[in-house]
Length: 485
Image (cartoon, rainbow, N blue to C red; front, top):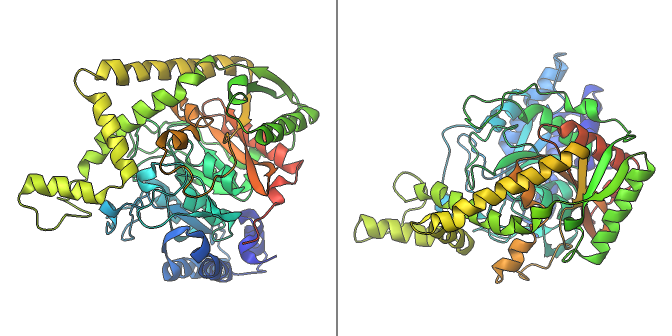
């Protein structure tokens, strides 16, 4: 097995035993990127020399006998909406094509403190708006399992980098499924933490009440290791929650005896691909055979989630993206007649069609005369959806569902039909509306393409999710399936 194919926890053992150096690991991943990324399109920016410099620093520490963190010397890919000081951060948008942040996002600072090796910045749907990673201003990201298929979005570059062994682990952001959906489509593990568990300082905002940074890994253990680093209160983020951050690896026990798992019938009904449904039912049966109590339940307001989400998220996007006007940073239209013309031309030329669509939707929903009819009503529905989850979690420890209603679809298939594209998020977006944690992990294959199992948990109970996911992983072989790219 090549170094770039191994998990972070296995590579850490090898570093401690001096079987390999961080420089060798990093060079292995860089070589892999140069070999396959032309087909995948995972990266907007590759940080070769920077990465090797960090790796050599870790090797010196090991040589000197310094204790190193489990992620020290491990190559990690970063979604290109997290600010990296002096390193281009584009949000895969023309309007930020040349933006060099003067500071690091908090998660980047924390990764730096443990000497993780930032290998590059990954492609994404522009401003995280999309479910396929086709909305990037630069190029689409392809699915490593079948390059004519989408990688999922919006964190498609991060998930594809881990699946194609172009990174060991990665960070993404999740506003309505943007970690879990690409994790499912690329056959890796992806976790969306509780809202407020991970600082959003330095994450370029799409929808501030929904956005959350989270990890991608080749297995559940690697996700737990990343959670240990990125979680915790940050005074720079007013929505960051003060809580005692546990060692998430302590929850990695192969045991679900007595765990109560509910399967919401709304997530297994009309619109769910029959073969995906079969895979999810088999996963539920596997967990039941291992000692969990599994039964059907209901989340009655699920049917309103899509419409509520696509009013709230675009409304917040309309507000957040008003700052991109060509004045202070980023793209500026050439030769405008006056300042108003400069604003108009800059935004018309700088934003792609999906971003414009959502800005217009959001501006309309917030406009006088429509605020109460649309946006305010959507907020009330959001409360009802959260109450559904609260009620369910009085009885169940974990809820189980498909991550996506359909397998990875062909590139170009849904680009011209926004509603069909939005429907892909039907199983994931309610989690963001409720602010709860969820994880997606491999649960089988349909016609040679991965199927994702989604587990949803109580606020700040990521530990139980990791325990359930780890147990499922340890008793199945789905995570061992690898694309042949």
